Length: 30
Image (cartoon, rainbow, N blue to C red; front, side, top):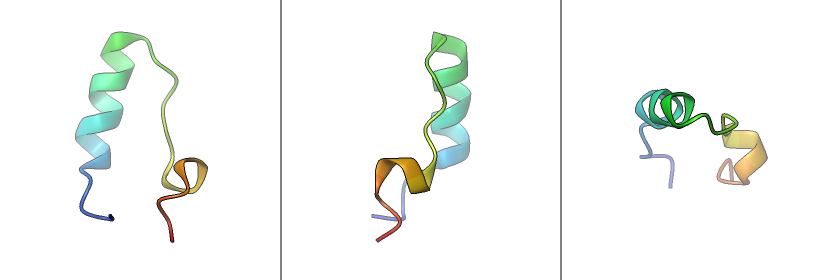
């Protein structure tokens, strides 16, 4: 599941005022 556009996701999360998610924090770095 490394096909997630983290740049776009973080950009959206930032606009929503949500804490940014990191690949290591979400456990997707498997």
